[in-house]
Amino acid sequence: MGKKAAKQPGTVATNRKARHDYLVLDTYEAGVALVGTEVKSLRLGRASLTDAFATIDDGEVWLRGLHIAEYDYGTWTNHPPRRVRKLLLHRREIDKLQLKVNDPGLSLVPLSMYFSGGRVKVELGLVRGKKAWDKRAAQADRDAQREIARAFSDHFKGRRR
Image 1 (cartoon, rainbow, N blue to C red):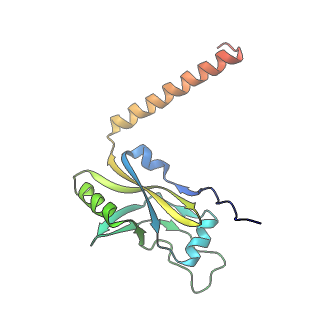
Image 2 (tube, rainbow, N blue to C red; image 1 turned 120 degrees about the vertical axis):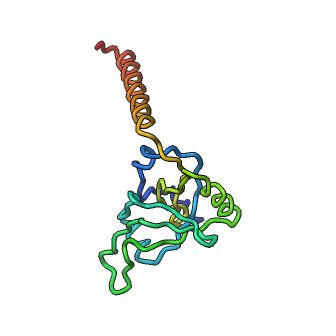
Image 3 (spheres, rainbow, N blue to C red; image 1 turned 90 degrees about the horizontal axis):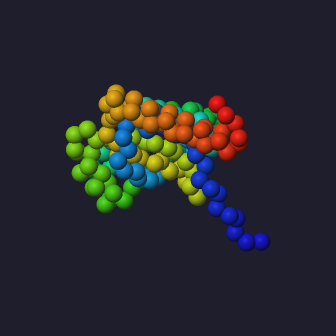
């Protein structure tokens, strides 16, 4: 029969507000140490990265503020929804991140959470906070690009505005 084809990474949750509030300087992929009911809940897409952030304590990376809803069919073995979860990275990556995060104004924020090869992964972003004028400039750029795309589309479809 042969092997099953590997499933494409399915996104469980994204942190859209992070890309609005922060300038992403670099991204890293990390595994997450989870318990069984957390994985089952994630397969149902019941997670929120809204208030989540990562810290480095004693040479280990921890994900804090991540909300994974309790599994509906779980029993007394259900997990606490906002527990601190360990992120799995290579020692070199952790050391490099430690040096960068020590710089003032830099933080680690999860950008997305997805399945890759049956395992849960988190895309971590090394970020710097945006100022209000940065956010307005980014919004103006997006609006301008949307108008350009709309004009091209209308032109090629033969419509006039």
